[in-house]
Image (tube, rainbow, N blue to C red; front, side):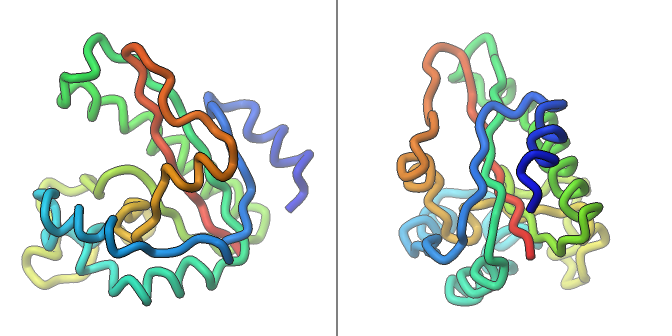
Length: 178
């Protein structure tokens, strides 16, 4: 990757921090998948979530099949961080950034796989519910957690911000590329 060209591209967007990572050190952790299974209402209901994304081993192999990844964050401000509806309403702007990074890497000739925030909500009802294939596989981004990625560990290892305090939200994505 031409870092200077990428920095020129990324400077046009409100990306808070980014790192280009080697994926070899990223592991798929069962503890993250357990949270999905036990606490998330989207579990077993969408192509972007477990178990549809595959086993943890398959997810880790998928991640490692891409030697590099751009891991990045964006900031959103809300009036009250405890207002889940308001917080989630800020996610779309981050998803648009994620799509822009993915499209840039594709335009540079890379094959990509994108992991982003939460679960997909492109469709009112996911085709997964009816045993049918995803109708927007080019736009659907599974969440980082669906693949067992511990975001806080990457943030700490890369000396990035995880919590800015106040009424700010940090959203994270990773676009894998080869």
